[in-house]
Length: 112
Length: 113
Image 1: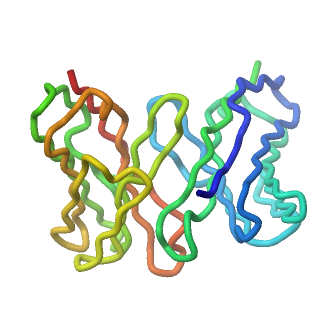
Image 2: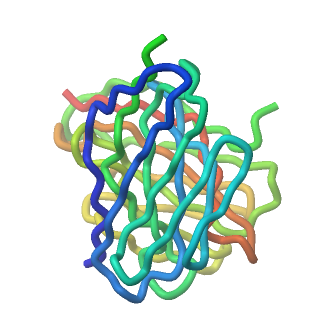
């Protein structure tokens, strides 16, 4: 059974600072990872995907994948109060298109 | 209009009742999924479907069944609801190539008394 682990938080970050969210995974064969953002009472929304070692940047968001250490991170630069949400890390459950295994999510609070 | 819709949005029912949750999508995606979300447990996969002829069990399929009536419709049934099925249920879709980039519906909050 694949596992994706996240610290549930809450993680509190001052506005304008960098928020760093981390995720570790158990299956060394996992190839791709996804970060979803979920506002309270809303559905998850895909914000980043990463398929290879290294960094991937998209606007204020940077995803980092380190396969040797089996961790994935999401950096949010210039954090805004609107970034306050739960961030879910996910990885494919199996070898094909058979759904995602999600971490339990990290609750991020950006303090104005 | 929303690309993935779910009905009902909220439902309160009693133990032993049969319940159906419905999901429709206008994204033209082949793949559809049902997840449940519980506080402290995260999102867990119940069932998934690659097309109308292909249904697969997920991590927690016991007590649930599904029907893929058309490419755009995927229903989840609880044949005899029990209180520990109280949860937030999400339908999701993905396309053939980017199948792990999933799009979620707004969710159905189900309470079983």
